[in-house]
Length: 240
Image (cartoon, rainbow, N blue to C red):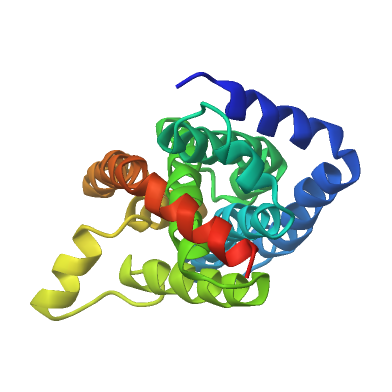
């Protein structure tokens, strides 16, 4: 990977100052009232998990579809940048920018926690960053099957909420298939960690961390391998 797309995306993010401020402020305004309220801890953790997953998925899928419509992907495709490098660097840059923008919201989560254990709290930013990388990779897959920005928004919402639900965010599964699905779901670690922080628990990252690591690895490999097909589909959809 050359790092050109990574550098480009990071520079664009810092130059779009109004958008950067909005993407930092709005999550904080959504998280802070929940964090400082007397809501049950499982409700708090569910809200945080949904917000972070949607934030990363939308932030990846919609700009990618917008760039396809504006012809930017077609122009980049004429260069010597490999498709795999293009999409993986884009996902990495998106996760980095999203992580920075969510720092104030994460601090609000910690502030509203019930005296969470320091060792537990220290995992928050790394787990949020890994989860955002998964969300950005999922956003690329979502964009590749959508034919417009409107479809992309719909697919991003459905996919993110499905993965959040599969991760046991809304209810703990009772049957064996549901438990197995939760075990291998990407946002299980994020939800369990947020639940620990909200309740002041002393647990540290467990099996959910391995699931997150596996998703980062496998989703990166799959995205890199399918990148030519994804970009071809996106460029054809952008010119349709």
